[in-house]
Image (cartoon, rainbow, N blue to C red; front, top):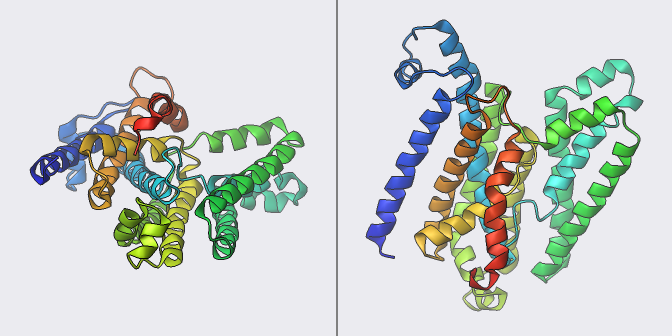
Amino acid sequence: MTNKHHSILFITFTVLLVCFFLLDLTSGQVSIPLKEVFKILSGQDASKSTWEYIILNFRLPKAITAILVGMGLSISGLLMQTLFRNPLAGPYVLGLSSGSSLGVAFVILGAGVLPSFLQTAVISSYGVILASFLGSFLVLLAILVVAQRLRNTMSILIVGLMFGSFAGAIVNVLSYFSTAEQLQKFTFWSMGNLGNLPWPSIGILGTTVTVGLVLSLVSIKSLDALLLGENYAKSVGLNFKKARLIIIIATSILAGSITAFAGPIAFIGLAVPHIAKLVFQTSSHKTLFFSTVLIGGILMLACDIISQMPFLEMTLPINAITSIMGAPVVIWLLIGKKNIQ
């Protein structure tokens, strides 16, 4: 595919991203005309004050969160698939999601052993976010220590899966001794949620995602070299250990921060990189980086729009929608595995 075709595709996907962003702002149980959305975004007074409140306090933060989540998870999935040369690797393959889940489980399911005055503070939204961050960060530290000791990249993948299995076992033990109310809260968190983030939290999420994306962008040449294997990468002068470390840190920042603020979001990181490869017909990570970012943002906005269709009396869990859309893609990948790069 020529550069001209790539340019046309990039323009098309950029326009689609803007269109889906605006559609997300107009969609919901309360339908708001596009004209009014433009008024509110430009700082003018809307025809109804309630519309302005809904857009600025609910839908705009949620739409921005959807874009950040879609972009961050998609890029981290691309990094993991290239590093491990495994088309079925995703952003959570290192056990980061399990670490976050374990941190949240300790807070929500284990808060009963704390004094009542501490329970309220710990189970607050910021307490859950902090616990998720810490859980993910501890797993990251463990992975980094292992990465310095192991030469084989596949061994790191296995260790990540073992961390995930261990954390999952601890969560199951905590769940067994928890009350129905605690289990319900933990289940709601595990379903994922793009809403309810205040602007300061979105600022923190935006900063961490930007840092992760910059580190990923810096790693583009390393990723291209890794496509042909570790030995080839070393033969062309790549500092393999340093490159692998940067890729793992970038993935950890993206997946860890997104899980902390939005919960574990399934399938986006696994499916989007393959969609980008199919559409752009290239293995160049310079092209794949920007295409994956755009498609990830679009797909996440589409899932958010579907989760809050006007005929639904409530908002569906975002994880259910991403799974419904992503599962067929993953099944197709498994069936046609021999054709995957």
